[in-house]
Length: 474
Image (tube, rainbow, N blue to C red; front, side, top):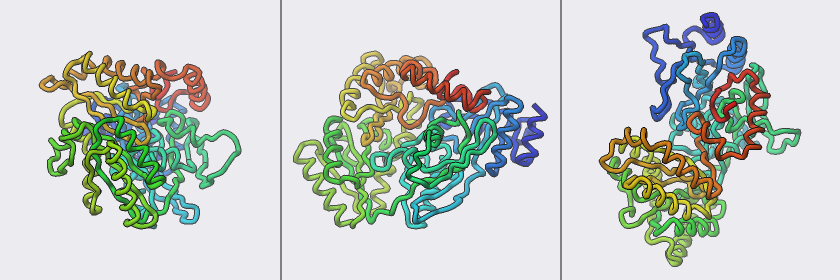
């Protein structure tokens, strides 16, 4: 492999091809996943600075049958962007490709490179007077290439859709090292198969996304946030229906959080002052983005909450009186994952269920897990507005979390996934499949769909060098 490493150094520069041969170089940041559940070993970490360099790297790897693991911010939760333990895979880091190439205000689009950090994209759009609505807890470190590769969701999907809906064009390096120049800003292009949608969500298994043209939106005149206590998950779904009715397209966020999830946020981040949760099993966080005025937005919110309280689906509520208060409420929601991590290892699930079936799913699955494993603690929260729950399982209090995960993870996953299937849902809503769910997918994906996916993979990546062992097994 020394000849390959020499070629990669000629392409990208020696300082941007990192190997274990140099004892002063630490590759661990690229070799383990964000949760530190999976630890691999790379042949080299390669950091190209341009699409031409990416294409040359892929060609060099294809010539030597060396597999490639594309990586952005490495914030994924399904171990889809770290190398295996063989020491024979190249990690292709896109972090140096982080430029905003163009902003077209009349077309409401921005073209950015794959390594652009999501927060920087949001900031560039806002400084130009626009909104880029994709918003995730990891937005300070995740990259748009990774967001596209996993079709990330986040907190504003209820209004703007997943990353897929926000993308109009892509630039992609194929498994053969060719460049597909697809950075169109067109909203209508009916000239055959939509290759853009094929690449989005493929997790680097079909090619390397190097740049994208993304949609922008006008900045709203006002954004208001409300926090509501609800007596049941059924009441939360009822409140969602009322929010659609009263806020229309202004409803840009609708998050649900269980009492135990909020108790963890309160335990580890007491400065956040979590409101209302001690007297209610569920709380809901709503966002209203208004293009008229703050007064109009507030009147809409107050009318919605008045109707909801009369209907009995809200027991108490607060509306943020300032931007700082609104950010504080959202920080509570975003802190749940960190608080859960501080509580100990846990078994995570990123699932989607038809919204109408979520109350029945939660009731049935909670009961099932508690019957099979008494004392487990259920950390339920997520994007109720689009049917996506983060349905996580924490060890019983006083039980060693590492032993619990080791001994019960397979059983918990099987119980949860079977319940998801029963309620016609998906075992992956926004985190992707990666390597952690690739073995489960054949049990829950339509066999004809799997066969089509394998055909596509074999056609576009006949050598199986693009992130092998992820999404689909051949």
